[in-house]
Length: 239
Image (cartoon, rainbow, N blue to C red; front, top):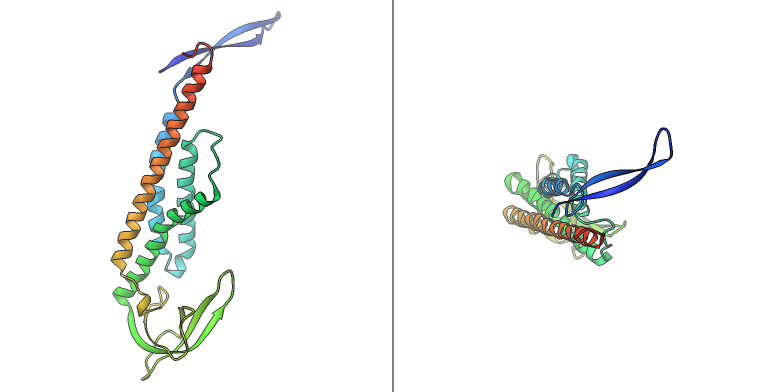
């Protein structure tokens, strides 16, 4: 419902004392600018969600890693801004566990798209060679990672080392898949997933993120409208 609100402001004549100046302000349910907010959120969520897929698709290519980080950050910020704009201010702070779950859900399309892109390159132009693990190197940092040094029999050529797992041992016989052009990192054949399956899961996860973000934004706009109606009802003459 639309109504006019009259507001009395104290002003001062150029000559003489103070006077009362009536002012009018246009009020709408949800507050000024709500239709614009809805339009911005509507236009912001789909591109942000799709940008997650693009960031994941380019992430396996080392020379495009910085671009992937930038696109991922832009996508996450876009989704966050859409949700924050939908809710009235101040919005309640969600629990830390909920934030972790939300972040994990948002990053799922990015990770799955990266796996799909990596697997696709190895499927299309990857070469496979048998090798033997000659040494396992343990790297310590924020987390522990392992690198297997390889030896190829019969004069075969391939990458000198491949990222591996804690349970890999010296003497293990493995099959290595790598891109001759070096666009993506080599993998053990056992670890190369199906590109089409990864792509399907990535798209499904991205659609889920988009739908959930739209749902949360809708809840925010409903709460914004409800709060505005409550304030209008509590104002004298606001019925």
